[in-house]
Length: 389
Image 1 (cartoon, helix red, strand yellow):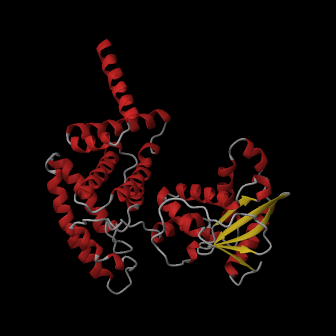
Image 2: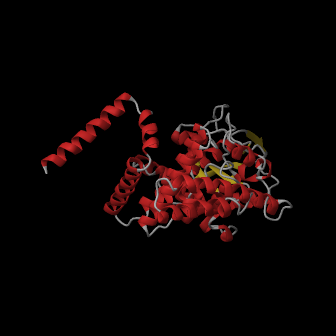
């Protein structure tokens, strides 16, 4: 919810901006509330957004500067801020949708002391900034400047000295609050129905009664999943590769998903992104590829046993891509990044053509005729080049 000071004349449309998958967490939470107040940068009217739970600030130019809906700029700055703090794109979009769901106009001075104190300090700091937004907009750096401006406000505020990483706290809480659960598709498997029995327990925390019991029951269900996954992998992988992959998925299911809440692989399709960002080795390219391969194979197996729908798999796959970006970004130079990316693509192609032909056929069947023709042309060009050597 945007809690807007009555003095602001924002002139935005009543219809909220929608992105991504619909919210599956209906309860209100201070993390979803942003107080919206006026501010000044040199002679430019600005709009200051302050998160109620973390006091994270976001500053955007008034509508007279950009002449677009202020909420549109706010959500783009927030999206970039969360991306820098390793929140998956889908989860960030879902969070932003919930924040923009409703507007509420309030008195200019609210009863929230911490928000008012932070607002005063942010305004004072902002008034002393020398940044030239007009020039930077022309140079295409406006959004990055606005993200940096939020960092500068928290870093220079004496009242917020202990919260200099307020955006990091925001990101951590977004990852914890926002979960995107799998749909309840038709013809669900017995294992999916068993997982569903614990769906209403996903809000439990370690201090709550019933948390340990729920986690233990989910671990027992995970044993059945991992047993079937192991058997499926054994048809195409050697023992070492199989053991490495099962170990990664077991850690994800039995530790990472159960650390703060009793979650199953059906309760948060975007959790894979957070896991990879936290766990995937950054200095060992081969080990990082093993992590990506493990979750790629898990997704294939999950679809095969009907735990997810096609829409669920798309959300999961997008989160997997988000989490895997660290593999390329960890390299030192552009050349290293390109080499790491090519190696990852090669490994996946080898896996698909040698051991996962059914999956490859399914993927190819979804290509358009134009895309298939282009692929045939590329293969022919490679073949012709090889003949010329």
